[in-house]
Amino acid sequence: MVGYVGPPVRLAQLVIEPPHSLYVQSYRPREMTSGVVNADGWGAALWLDDAKAEPALYRSPQPIWADSNLGWIGDRLPLTAALAAVRSATPGIAYELSCVQPFARGRVAFLHNGFVTGWQRGPARMLREGLGDAAYQAVQGGSDSEGLFALLLDALDRGAASLPDAVRAALRRLERICARTETTAVATVLVCDGSVLVGARHAVGLLPASLYAAATLPAARELAWCFASEPLWPDGRFREVVDAGGPIGPPCGGASRRGAAGGGHLVRGARGMETGVWRAELDEARAFLLRAAACLPAARWAERPSAAYSPVGWHLGHVAATQARWLLPGDPLGERFGGFFDPAQTSKTERSDLPAPVQLLEYLGETLETVRRRLWDCAVPAVPGLPHDFLVHSIAQHELQHAEHVQVIAALCERRLQRAAPAAAPAAGRVEFAGGDATIGCDDVAEAYDNERPAQAVRVAPFWMDSAPVTAGQFAEFVQAGGYRSERWWTPEGWRWRAANEVGAPLGWPDVQPGQAVSCISWYEADAYARWRGARLPTEAEWETARRAGLPGCGQVWEWTASWFLPYPGFRPYPYDRYSTPWFGTHRVLRGGSWATHSRLGRPSFRNWYVPGFREIPAGLRCAGDL
Ligand code: AVJ
Ligand code: FE
Image (cartoon, rainbow, N blue to C red):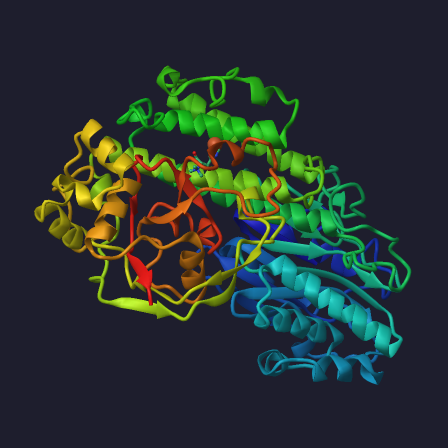
């Protein structure tokens, strides 16, 4: 079998043209341990280079060498992802079209190389009986491979967080079924949804079927990701997917004993699988950053529209330098520009003397490329006490956070930040919450920042919140009513801040749309507005409780809360001491996210923080009150 994601290729480049192509493997396989040829059909799931998420499925019960359709299928279709396989039927399992792989449902396609021993005698029944309706109905034939596919679908239907998680869950279930029915299985699988390709080399009580992976192909000029049962090219670019060992992947007890996996279900294959997913994660963050940078012509990347910010170009360099520093420790890439992109070494006023835009883009590109190769070699550093993949997740999130700054600075350069939120429906009414015992924070140790942990129980009294952020039209009433001239609405610090900065309206006022969320206000202004309305700002605990209960209208502007930025009880700083700690007690918390925030940072527990006088941000508020 072969799996591919990457720049457009033709199927022939994967299946016919390589020296040890799938076509050759169908009649002269090298590493097949059961059977001699793969003559019982062939098939392919093809993600064509059109905007569709679902693959086109082609399956034939003929041997690949006898299929005259291969000519046009191989040559005429540009693909950005594919799964393809030649089949050798297991004795006792049907020889017919419904058993030919890949199997697909929606955007997900699946290949299995292996078998479940005694499939009809026990495992088949147990497996099918445990399936949910949707997965059960997706099964058309009677093969063991399709049974495994149904386990994968069931894991997805039951809400697996990602494709690799679903693969893990399906293989874990296969292990349980094998244990209960006293059978063994070979389950090397490939799963793809057109953008993520997951490979797992797995077996229960037997040796797993071979699997190789490559990060470059002669057929594709750019980086691509490819799995194959046997190396398609003999030049060493394909590496065997092996026991992960070391800090990456689950602990391995050996590949050949039943149950050896213990807690680590993927006995083999963790390496190729995990690194492929991480690569996609870093690529996605990079695409988001570059789209953000494209909001401002590169000639303006050194502009600094406000003393509160660094130029766009500095943020781009900082992202690359941070990625190099954490994921490539000791690599000269981290030192290319000395300490210029380290906020601790270069103050905001000195950040405008920047490398040229092409140099910044090269720096970003080279760093990511080097990280991709290191991921491949499993040489990514770990933080003691955290999952081995924590740093990859946090570096991707760091890039997304700076991508928000880049969009905000671009908007400030063009004096449109105050108008940047999407026009929202008018904020009608309020939502009531019963309160009670709630949990806030996040214990996802691979994903959460230090300040979100540990998750904790809180008690919240009954409260209400506006059903949408306050609009500019609503805020205008406060401005017109003289809210900025009347001390009674302001805290003493707020009143001093207002006078010292001669503030009489939000930043950018009155160039705003009445229907949009009010934006570019400080905590002091948000707090004064809420008092004028006879209300108050919500606490963090209230905001998060409301969000978990389905608070509408999030993601337009960050929402100021009444809470100071403080550590949760049991807080432990990581990955470095000064990520959150320096800001505790002097900054206020904002929740929710803005139009410029990537959805991944929109999790209910995510905390943002700024000093109360900061207003060059897409931040507004909603009012709250006791019930
Ligand atoms: C969470 C927005 C306050 O962007 O300055 C980025 C996060 N820390 N790089 C910021 C952060 C280091 C921080 N804020
Ligand atoms: Fe940073």
